[in-house]
Amino acid sequence: MKAQLFFAFLTAIFIVGGTEQMVAQQKNPIAINQFPPSESVGWNSPASLCQISIGSAPSKIDYASGSVSFAPGASGTIGLFCPITGVANGLSPSDMNYIALTFSNPNVEAGCTVSTYFVDRTTTQNDGWASDRSREYNGLWTANIPLDRTSFLPLNHTHEANVYLFRPESAGDTCNPVAYGMFLENVHVIF
Image 1: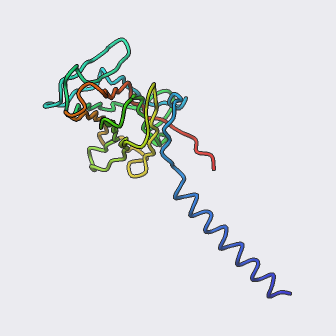
Image 2: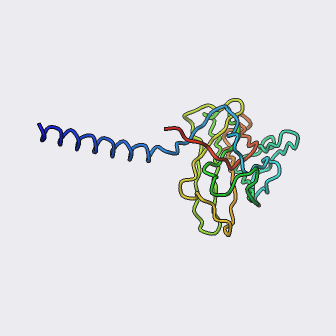
Image 3: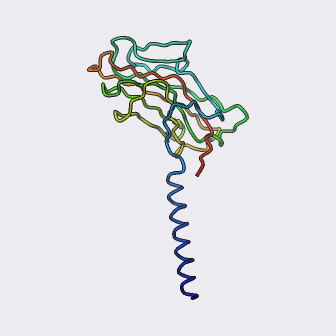
């Protein structure tokens, strides 16, 4: 009887240990949905106020919506660099565990993509996400990307949010990815 209880106890320990490891690996999933960013935002910037990198494709900036997209007939890559100057709204840098991008990317089969990265410029570590052709992004979407490698933002480091919009020449004007805004957020992950 004692042996059976002992083996049941060991089995339970292995199950709990394996479950804990599985949860840890899936603790911070990437979420792409049509909801706004988290209510706990510590930093944000409209895409229209970010610096467009030198050599980027011609872009269209709409200050009313805060968006950046391709100019008619343009192709290539638009790079947006958004320096993160601090965390506010009663949150601390150590609270920030996700970077979010609001975007649109309809007609993905034509080859347009959107990607975003949170970069620790001091260590060159980054966390990011890039769209692919497997999902249509008509309308306004939010990509919430966990800060796995760059979490616990040290105050003495320099950070930035980078966004890249890509449109191949072959696409013409059939697809036009749009970046609206970037957010550093505290997302409560429920297990």
